[in-house]
Image (cartoon, rainbow, N blue to C red):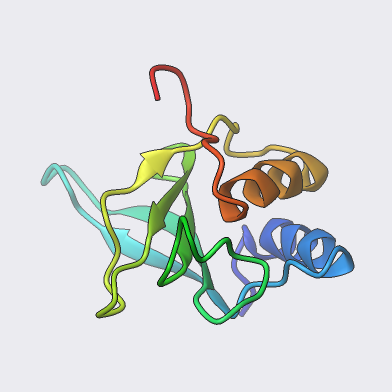
Length: 122
């Protein structure tokens, strides 16, 4: 069964691949959760990881970068990876949840190159 956000993430991945920025690994998922005890809701997300890529500025991100798309947070976010594969705290990207794939690509190119691409106040 296809997830509702899978075509959008596939379009982002295609745009990244077209300019040789395809992530090392990625996945989409959904979860039925009940965060407030008032009924289940579906939380859609996607994770893109660059941990073995020439596309990543290793001086700024020696262990790689994780990017997440989260419907529950209504946000694109990113974090540096640590040597053990875990990630640092996620930081907001200045992108709406439904940003055009070409805008996502430009923002991620900035992040991967080691330049700041966070939201306001970052």
